[in-house]
Length: 173
Image (tube, rainbow, N blue to C red):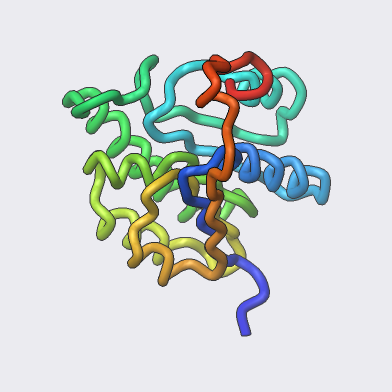
């Protein structure tokens, strides 16, 4: 029975996937673990990134996206950023320097065909046995969920944006 180095997937259409992953990063850091966060598709500075940069130097965070979220079709720069990021993540995993590696929005990168499921699975298969990996984002493919040791689906039941509430700093970004 495997007890460490598990693969977790946080998916679904509800709010909280990235927040849950960052919560795990905080927990791991509190336990003296080394954490690497790779954010795919995102390039903007969100409040959680600022908090990590300002207060948690034990967490390394890199973004592999441009300064805007993909709305319709990715442009070549989106594809290049994601593929470069996945290649860097492969080296990070092979280094064995981190206890927890978070691939934030990797499912969205898959959804937009920024890199292939085979490429992601190949990278995951190379991770050290002791390294935990969390993959977030909507639209997790069935094959990735089958590969995972834990899958959590965030399901939207009710959200205030349907009442016109806009994204708020510190809560949605």
